[in-house]
Structures are given as structure tokens and as C-alpha cells.
Image (cartoon, rainbow, N blue to C red):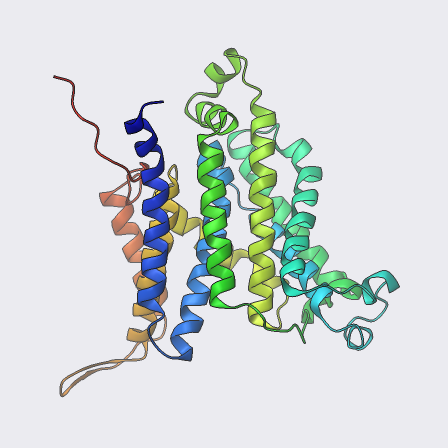
Length: 339
């Protein structure tokens, strides 16, 4: 590999890391409320990058990834809630779970591993499906996990969910996990398996004809993506302090998918930029919803303005840029034209 090729390989990764660090530094220059907003935006970015590892590289749209977030969140919550409190929160919880305890970092890792193990089991049949059938199957997975979480009261707290979760998620913790996820996503997409998966995304029949095991490539990406989604869910649960299954259901599913699609479905840069842009726009609209003061002029707020404005902006972006803000391309150095 030539020195220029090495530079071209590292520029996209370096640019994304600098972008994340710069956006975090700018947005967190405020009080406690600003820190909470930045934390939420970074957790959303974590979810989007995790989703990109499978959806962006395989081209298979998944509506079920938040099921892994729920698995990670409930697993981590069970591990960090003090053991003396669990019997009063979970009636009939198995003794092995009552006495299980771990540090916040370990709980996030275990949450990701449990989500990855669960994804491997359900991925055996799901990864053999294609197109609309695969997307509908992942949506069915989300429905199943949500219903199990609502009714498995001895482990998840049922419809009321879990509480008394120590709120240990910090800005540094989430930023560190986001950078790790971006690094792993970049390394995986540049690996041989990532290249095979991208080939199947462009033309599955040709990829199979070239001897690529599409099912295996998808399964590897599915499991890696599930691990990071589970870790993101664990961080989110430890940020909220109390939550139920609805925190990982349709609302957050469509927000995360929208961030990925608006940014650029087929590029890691799109995942990062789409998440940052929509988080910024969403916060601005949320503040405008409460009313705007311009000198002596007061413009009253309107309930629902943030949702309506966000939807219109998303439509506008997708009309003007059907492949997203980045056009589905990575950040990098411009290629010299052949003479």
C-alpha cells in the first residue's frame, strides 16, 4: 500500500473523530441542562453508529434493533441495582439475579454481550431473509421483545418498568463508547468481511455468484451491531434511572432510523453527520416550541412544532438529497483526475 493510500484510508476515520469531539466540545459549553442534552445526543449517535454497522453495510433495513437496546438496558439495570433493593422491586425474581451485581462499566459490557448472544440466536433464521421480508421480520422481533418485557414482571418490572437504577452515565463514558463504536465500524467496513457485505448490498446475486457467503457476512455484522446497540441501551438506561419497555420501542426506533437515512444510509460519515444535524435541529425546534423572543417582539410557541418542523426538514433534505446529506459517501481526500 502506498503512503497516499494509507492517508486516504485514515482521513475518513480521523475526520469523523475530530467532528464528534468538536461537536461535543461546542455543545457542552453550558450548564447542567446543556450537558443532559449533549448526553442524549451522544447516546442517539451511539445507537445510529451501531445500526449503521448492519443496515448501512448490508442494505437490509432493520426495525428491530431497539430490541437489543432493551435487552442491554434491562440486563445492565439488574446488575447495577443494589441487591438489597431488588426483592422490593421485582417480585419473584430468580435468586441468581437478585444476588448478581456489577460495576457500571462491567454492566454495560455484559449488557452488550447478552444482546449479542440473543442476536446470534434470532439471527440464524432472520439472516436468511431478504428485502421486505427481512424488514418485517425485524419489526416482528421488536414487537415480541416489547411484549415479553411488558409481561415478564419478575425480571423487567412489567409495564411499570425498573427504577432505582444508579444514574452513572457521564459525558466522558458515552463519548468514549461512541469513539470506540466509530473505530470498530470503520475497521469492520474496511475489513474483508465488510467488503463482502458491501458487495452483497450492491448486487446480492453477483456476490453469491462470486462465492461470498452473504448469510455469514450479515450474521457477523448483525452480532457486532447488536453488541453496540445493547451497550448503548445499557448506557441509556443508566442515564434515565427509571424506564420501561416503551423507552426502546417505536419512538426511538424511527428517530434513529431517520438520523441514519437523512445523513446517508450507506456511509459511516452519514451516520455521524445525520445524528448531529438532527439532534441540533430537534433541540432548536424544541426551544422554539416554547416561544421565541426577538427584541420586543414575542412569537408564541405552538405545541407539536418540534415534531412538525423536524418532519418537514427531513422531507426537504430527502427531496434535495435522496441519498442523504453525504450522498452515501465517506469523508476523505479528493481523488486526482487522471490526465
